[in-house]
Image (tube, rainbow, N blue to C red; front, side, top):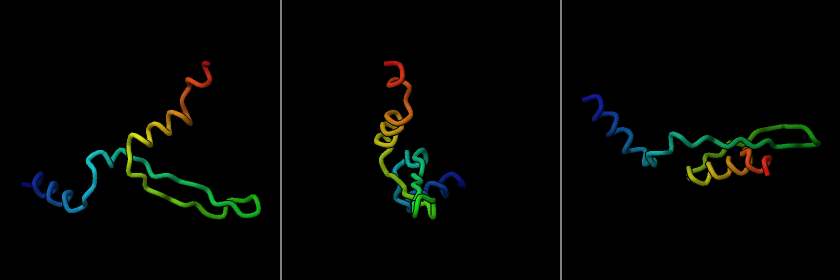
Length: 64
């Protein structure tokens, strides 16, 4: 019963099943060289985010 209730609530959110694994993206807002704010965005494409992480934080570029 509880499981079905959770499924029903989740269905109303209209989210992709993998969206729980996507991290929010934080970007600093600068003014006069100082951080004055942070913007938060919520990407919707898991694969794209993982490829960006691999490109930015991967070790392969260091090894070549």
